[in-house]
Image 1 (cartoon, rainbow, N blue to C red):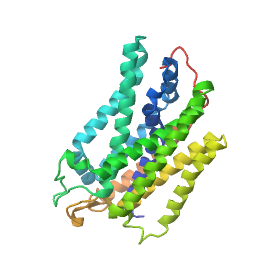
Image 2: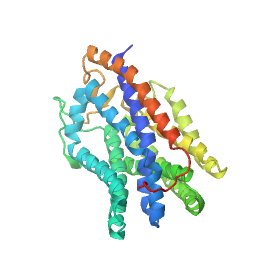
Image 3: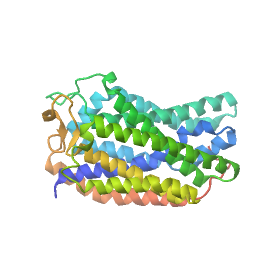
Image 4: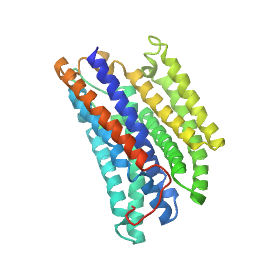
Length: 338
């Protein structure tokens, strides 16, 4: 088995798991200010309250696996994206703090402040994730020493920002479908309208991002000629996206959520195809790109990590299944709720 390829695929699985699970968390935060009443905002927070910290384990695991398996790529990415990652860290921290502190006092000003922090932090986090993806596909200035040779503002081009806004819309749609599953009554009926509006925005940005990628970003499709079977995934992705409005129209929100999850997984897969075999594409010279071989740890390290992964992943998956099964059903506000 090619251990380098194994860890590239494993990173993709971890990233897809995080994007699907924490994607609806972030989507709920993005939509948070759409709830006008305090009780409704509490419902929003409690819909993800038992889940959000467990969902972020996937991101932590992804970062740890990247550090151990491909340390050169980890070092270059974190030095080049240092300010962006710092902003992302603050966004994730403010998001968590907002959830924990909002209900500590009943003051409208206190709760309003943390409502805006929760919404803003969720939106910024989703935007930065998308900007990072856009830069990885487009390429970043990496020199022959595997060092980032640009500045923070070099990362804020049109295409990365376009991908960032697209990710915000995708998570908002994903979150609205999740909220519909977790709510009842009048609030659920209003969220039904949100699902249509967020899907419409997502669809427009999906088409715009796809067209721009095909025309202006050669790296996005560079592997499609060598691996034509990838078009099957593209077709399945289109079918999954098309099934979202169909499922909403038929009153089957669970099917819509599954289709949304499949679409996110397909996007992560196509992102991996666009990069392969690179991890970070150099815009200065293709020879200076960091791939799964020149950025990897030793074979012994990768093999030991593989054994640990085979032992640990069943526990992570079992924990995830148990938590989601335990907190299934509609949200109920109780004494110890957020």
